[in-house]
Length: 307
Image 1 (cartoon, helix red, strand yellow):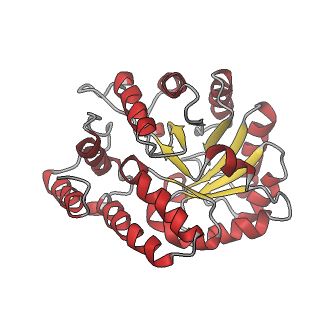
Image 2 (cartoon, rainbow, N blue to C red; image 1 turned 135 degrees about the horizontal axis):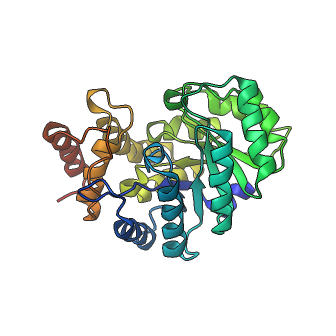
């Protein structure tokens, strides 16, 4: 088995960040959510301050405190991975080293956002990070948010660095790029981990060789996702498809009205299923409308997630 998969599993769950009425981070609810996820075994590893955690809307200090809360609450029961990508190389290095200080061994690092560097700029960014930290680095490619695509040849160059261990690809943007990454890295590092980061692309990317899924939907569908991997491994493709369709329907519903980031609709859905108050997304993300919530709630009821 791939070493990364053996350590962190197939389901990496990017934790959603709860807020109070004043949009302040609610660390108590964060700990409660983590406890719920662990007790119900909905994932293999926890990711702090990823895209689902609204990392770009959090301060440096908030991200560090969320890491602290996750490490303390998980208490070794599930591995904790830190999302430490920032717009600048300097801040990315600083935040990654804060994660290392807290005992976190692996960081998920998104491509620098807003400034749209060239492929050479991306290579230099991640190389500088790798050389400045003891953490293992999982590259995070999500061009729909950062504005640039991490090309396969750049990933190949980075895979040669000893502590760059894998990549998470937002496969819905480039549906065949998982295969490109596999082909580009297999002779450089046969143990290089390739994960899909888009729930609706779970089945297509398993076929392409994705080793796991980074899934915000696992807050609700962790058991089903685990069963899909099992069914596929056993050759029961019909069962995998049957389990996948409800997840697909739900995840598509979180993008109503052109929403790119699903958080505004995902939050109330998680609240309904878990009973844990998360609050609306932080500004400038507009909260879910009554109509949007009604659509998603109806799907949850139809597929048996709500009474």
